[in-house]
Image (cartoon, rainbow, N blue to C red):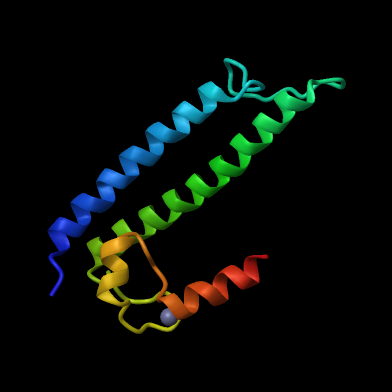
Length: 117
Ligand SMILES: [Zn+2]
């Protein structure tokens, strides 16, 4: 059996890490201004733009992770943690150990990702 308390701590830990990574990304983004708005002016240096776009993609990924984490934490509260959101089957424990915030089983995760694209 998995220890839900350990898992919860793991997830919360990851949540903190992601939030601080997001903050760091913001600081590193050459086009992010103090008020967090992003201004892309015509003639912006290509290297700057590229670095900005990379940051945006990474940010998106981290935000996706945060959404999953929030959902996993909500499930722990409700006592439905560890069940796949799509098919309702229990998620493989090994998978939860590697990715405690997972809300889909491996099979459904693949399908959901395919739909996204
Ligand atoms: Zn599933």
